Length: 91
Image (cartoon, rainbow, N blue to C red):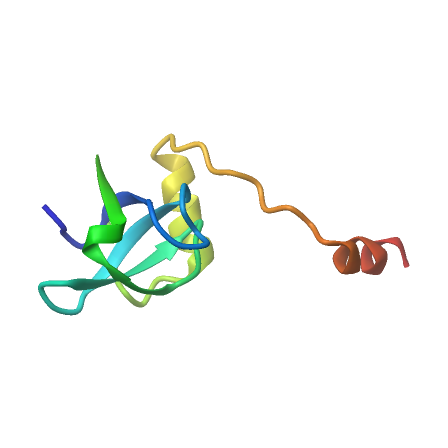
């Protein structure tokens, strides 16, 4: 069920509700994910797998993974800009 390229939704932690893609299987309990959430090691009990599987590998950049998710038709949440970023853009 948990394959490389499987699109999942995180259900625990600060990234809960965000979509991610499994990029590497570490062992029977942990996988590496990347995508809308931070790239990190995640317990598989904290993931809800979706039906979609993308062609990815662990050498792909975050931007490549996000563009593959958008091409597959997933709607991703836009990242909110903080006050510091807004001030830098005004200059």
